[in-house]
Length: 224
Length: 318
Image (spheres, each protein chain N blue to C red):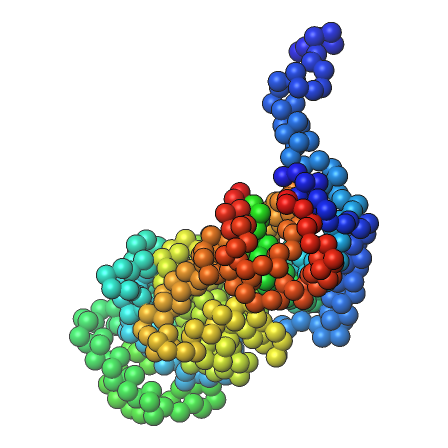
């Protein structure tokens, strides 16, 4: 352990992993960017709300899902309170996907991958795909007629790809475990990454009113 | 990225990120809770083997007979359940369904019929004798009994929950089926199909495949608009919205060549893989990345900006 006299002072002379990581984060993601109190005036459009509502929908999904997971998969079938919590879970999933889709299409027509934001778009698409799988595993974990039928029919598509050998949709235990643990953690981590990516670079500037071929921004569309 | 340089020349306005998130959380919560209180959520009880056998004993016995003879949909399915090939989907020589082999391991004859009957035969001399007779017969004899009995089921009737067939040479098959129907109607078969020799069980592969081989389950699903031809992926029981976000996945099943292809599932999955790849890499794909420039939706989204730009021609180079 270093003595107080020999401890490096915080700053560029601190060569520890922790110090280097801190300097990297301070340089790449200053708090002023992470929690901005001013934004370009064009951010006033309602389109920017879609992503925020999708995130809040996800918060409701996870909150209600935690309650459902705590009481077990059979609880909501026999409890009035459980049925209400499941209903919150059900409708918040619907809200999440509606606004995630609106957000995706909004960002597409804004060409939001411009100026080095391609990876932000890519992560957003991955969130949507992982969200689909999360929703699917939830539907087959409902322990009702719908869950039975979805599982029975979905097996053919999954088996056709060869994935059925290790992803058995007829195995409730496997689907439930994946749904309540692995996928929510993955979606949450990806959403955090996505939001950080947005805050890191800020929102993209509007498409300048000129022809794409002459815009000059094409090379930077794909820069990371 | 230097955001100050990027936004140079563009006015900024006060913006409270956390306040916006909290307000959105509250607003979305109000909408969600209102929907939950007003509309609740779908929950049609699951089908059990017991219900199936009680409500449609003839369909149950017909299905069970096909399981015993190894001619059911599940028996012929192929990987990952059986060694068959009826449901193996291929594109030319490519058959990913075969790559991992028979990983789940299913023997419908034993798992759905003979195994449960063997357990039920304890203390039931008639059933034990019928099982012995069936097991002692050669394959041709078994097949003759099953063919005759399956044919007779076509004109069978049900009386007080029992299936009645015309007299014929069916060997021990009617005794086997009568006992299996009895065990099923009592609810015992629901447990026997899950029994694995250990205590805990969460794998419902066997009862689901068994029920899926019959016609009763599909009839219930049709009543709830859950069939593939009914855009079932997007529906829920009781007219609730289902996985509407799978509309594109569901759409392929409604149109040629997918709706008539024997390998439709594999074709649809691969099509969706390809479209997902295109979506993910839109920023790198000419035309796809240019469409937003051509369709002026952005002029609606950023109309305030473009109005401002008319009097401020150079907002900065970024």
